[in-house]
Image (cartoon, rainbow over all chains, first blue to last red; front, side, top):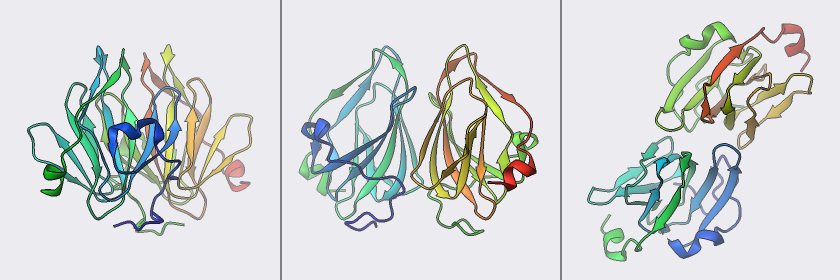
Length: 137
Length: 137
């Protein structure tokens, strides 16, 4: 488990993720590592922080790949059990699949998010993961 | 500096990189993390190991992004000074640019390699980095 200073992170945490804060429960941080060709961001979640259910929409291609770099987290697709994430884990999120990801209750969590290029891509942000569902993990 | 057991790596080292061994000086390892949408591999170089000069060729798009995760390494473009690499560093390699990358003399080195999708992409492998040029770093 990474500590509050997140000293085990390989990539810099970056600033508070204000641009997407409305779609997150709790505090997250976003450090954009690459914009050209393939968008890559380092996302850090404080303990208990997670994003809302969302869908990566596209006419062709698209989706996202998570490369977990520190701490303990979760990934869950709609109607499926949550998957515990640890450093070194890789998640391929297909376009069109409703899902969320975030930190464990008691751990900071960081992953790289690699956007798969697609045509007319956008994110559809949906309801928050309920406290009841999250606490039951 | 990571040790021989490479215990500081976040991602598993994977098997010996036999498929590309002919284009490397020294031993490298390749763990393919994702093939769908965007190809991502974890490449680990033993101390002194580096790949030959090469060019990512494509009709459109393409190139590669390096995300450095452990150890000390080098990246160099043709006719430019070599750039020292450390964990957390990011390198955007444009298509069409002759370059090489690899470990420092006295350190293991690992980076994620993210392939930027392109049309009719291929690698043009060229001459090895000479011992003279490498030792002068």
